[in-house]
Image (tube, rainbow, N blue to C red):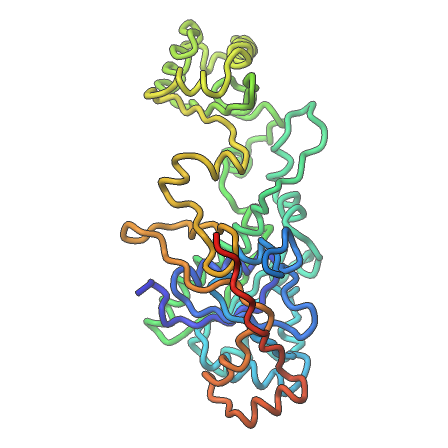
Length: 399
C-alpha cells in the first residue's frame, strides 16, 4: 500500500504547474481525477511529440490519473462537481485568482460542503496583492524572483530562458504537494482541512540563497559575477575539449584535491585569495581546455573534488547512475519511456499504474462511484453537462 492510498484528489489544473503536483500525489497512491471542460481540456496533450495521439509531456505528468468532462459553467455541472467534492479529500485548481469563486466553487463553498476538504489554489503570484491577476508563465515567475538576473555574468548580455520549468515544478508542484500532505495530516487529526494558496513566483522568491540572506541582513546586493562564490575559480563552469564541466569545490580539502589532480598544486592556497582570483580562473580555464571528458573523469576518479561534467539530457538518461537508480521506465500503455517518481520508499520507487488518460475517458466510471444513477448520468450526457467517455486506445506496438 502506498502512503496516499485511499486519498481522492479532484484536479482542475492545466499544463505543468498543478499537473506535476497532482502527479506526485498519484505516484504516492492517491486517486487523482482530472476534471476537464468539454472544449480543449488540458492542452498539455498538444505539447511535444505526439505519442498515441497525446503529447509526450502529458504522458509524464498525467499518467496514473483518471479524466472526466464536466461543464462547470452550467448550474447542473457545478452540482455534479460539488457532489464529487463530497467524496474527495483534496481539490486543486490552477485558474487565475477569483475564477473558482465566480463559478460558485470558491474554497468557502467547498469547505462548507465538506469541512475536512483540502482546497489548493495554484497561481502565478498568489491569491491577493497587486500582481494576483497578472498572467504569467514559468519564465515570468523566475524573472520576478530575482533568480534569473543572477544567471549571467556582467558582460554576458541577457539571461537565457531555462529549458526546465523550475518555477512550475517548484512553486506549482513540489511546494503545494508538501502543503497538501501537511493539511491532509491536519484533516486526519482534527477533521478540519484548509485552503492552500501556492504561487509560482513565491516558490522562487522565497528560495533561500546567500545573496538574499545578505541583502536581508542589510548588505548591498553585489553585481552579477562578483558574489561570494561567483567569479571564483572553485565555483564556476569551464570548457573542455569536448564539452563543459562545473567545479563546486567550496571546502578547502576538495579544492586542494582538485589542484593536485590537475597538477596545479601551487593554487591550493589561492582559493580565497582575491589577489590571485583571476590567476586561478585563467590557469584552471587553460588546464580544463586541454582535457576531454574522459580524461578529466580519469584524473578525478576516486578523489573528492566536487567536479561534474555537464550532461545533456541524453547524457543523463544514458548514464550508468541513472540506469542503476531506475530514473526512467517503460510507460504502461504507450511506446515511450517515462520519468520515475523522484522518491524511493522503503528501498523501491512507486510502481507504474495506469497511463495518461484521454479527455473524459472515465466520466461514467467516476460518476457511478459518486452514486449518480444510470438514468441521471444518461441525462447529463444528453444535455452536455458531462461528456466524452473516450474510446479505449489501440494497444501500443511491442517494444
